[in-house]
Image (cartoon, rainbow, N blue to C red):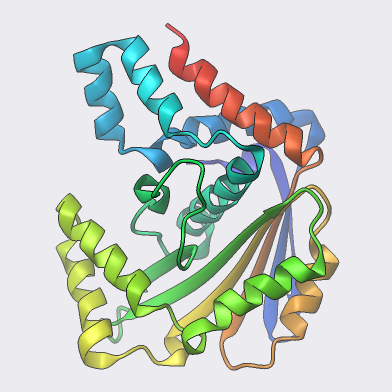
Length: 259
């Protein structure tokens, strides 16, 4: 898991009825950020059990090649993937929700972006025994601009602001294939086919990873939202964004090849 507190500072501010958190990488701890991120990245592309089995059966060189072959090659796709990885890691560690699958394991091609809702966090409400959802759009940019947040808003507002049935069916099917979390599968199917998803059971997370400060842009984007769904804006700001992304993937490959 990416330990943001080991290399970042965080500051929270209200944005009307919504909430903005800016996580800023400490330049002095950039190397720590690269290392802890690189340690988490492989599991987003392949199950830990698959990596361990390859290592045990095929040896270090073959398992390293397997990991390397799963990683995107282009800077743009690496940046986008890392934005989604950070969003997933933040949800699991800090939101109170959890992301039940790591979507990038099911990419059509390593140099293509994943389609559909970026990440959906879930939690079973103990009072109602029904799911609550955190619908997420993750954006990664060297220089974050307002237009990028407009694009994210378009994604969040699709399907009436609710998680799409396609995305939830995808998660349910993957969990079934993995043999994981039958109660969650049942709860997803209940939401899809019996109870429906009321808007008050959904929050939105607009997650950004950028080389410039997202504070003003996230605040403006959330304040401009006119709808009924609660909004969270979380921005990870790392100076030298492009170099940082490159260093993370270089470290993943180096770690995989180290004896």
